Image 1: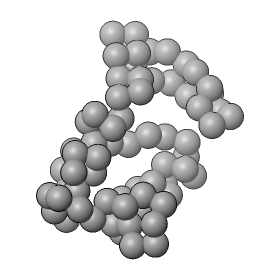
Image 2 (image 1 turned 135 degrees about the vertical axis):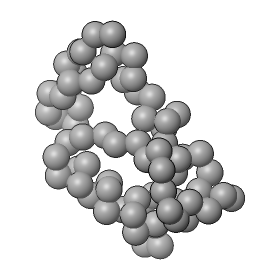
Image 3 (image 1 turned 90 degrees about the vertical axis):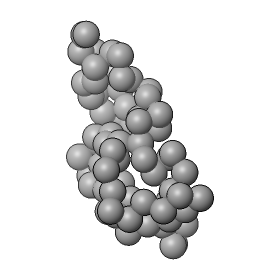
Image 4 (image 1 turned 180 degrees about the horizontal axis):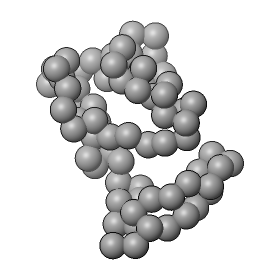
Length: 72
C-alpha cells in the first residue's frame, strides 16, 4: 500500500492509492439510504453535517456505521 498525493478541489491531499476514488463504494449513504439526498434541502442532517466538515477541511469520509440508515 502506497500513499499518493494529488490535487483535489484545488488543494493537494494524500490518499492510500488502493482507496483513491472509491469513497462511494465504501459509503453506507451511497449504498441506498432513503434519507441521503445530496444537494437537496431535505438531505440527511448527519450526511449534510459530515459533508460540510469535509468541505471545510478538504477531506473525504465514507460512512460505515449510522444510526439513521433507512434502506430505500
